[in-house]
Image (tube, rainbow over all chains, first blue to last red; front, side, top):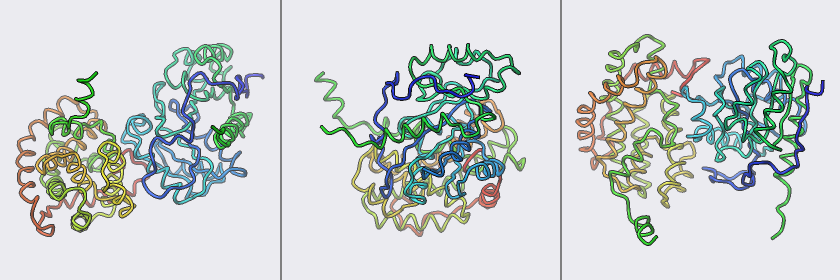
Length: 241
Length: 237
């Protein structure tokens, strides 16, 4: 049971990869300046549960945070309904971005369409605390540009095979939080959670890792806690000097 | 070190600048637009290399030629003449009957401005961003970019035409699984036409904005309107 939902590395430990402070904007917004929301990218392979995690985070955090979502996934009315029904976000706080069959390009090599969507949301729904940017389902090498997001969560799942963490790749090794999702299915797909967790730790050192089952924890409690912690850190006053 | 510093301070040649701007990897959002190919594929009008080649020819000679003329004309007027840019932008707006295509063009113009203001800094960019919060039409912004990068109107026209052809060509590779090499061979066969159209477009560079060409591709306009209503789109236009 201990695998169901736990962040295995303390969130206040120094991450393995050093990133610029979230307030170090690499690109000035193209238009009116708004209070800048924290941007968190959520990436990972197709079907690993990104949309469900986004919905869970919205549900858990919407009471305390002003948040909005940009989705790059192939986006049907069903997806929109899913997000609307399973969260408390109004439609005006959700933007879809088409990626021309190149989901990785939209989050890494040419982030302009996503920056447009983010800034549109900041203009239309200001002030916002948090913007979640969900990538289209891609492969293990698809990570977000630091010009687009401040932090990124990479979501894999047990049914993709328990060797996935060992494969590594930039998503697994460098994401600010790695989520191994659908732990409730492990026994059904012969996935060894201990192997997955140990391999992930070997790849990531002390960087945070979360074993998640949205069936057993529909609030995604530990991921939401991590997000709140990041938000608190990002908005803390800069040390003087 | 001295040599490197001196080289870094020197101005780049026009060809290297043109190559940088024409590269499909230049991050200005074009990869997510199919230039009407997604709609044409769904309707069965483009389904193989031969139908794609016809589509590309038609697109180059219509919307491509218009984009090239406006791009060249903007380039000829430079990046700072906001009044001239406004006039050209309004004229191109009037030549784009589809609201979906107008919106797509302006969004691409904004995305290009995002890249341009960092790659080729110029005092005009902030003013354009403020005056056109939803963006200039992409060919106008491309012309202004070309001017700031010290390119000629002829190069600007070539850039616009190149984009009008290569964008839908690569979209077709992704949508139909066509052989990418065969598709590039088809594009290469179109280059004499592209050169001819660019030369013709350049002749308008110093002309009056209302005299610029207004070739239209009615099917592209209509299918773009349909495309914008689809529940699931892989491309933004």
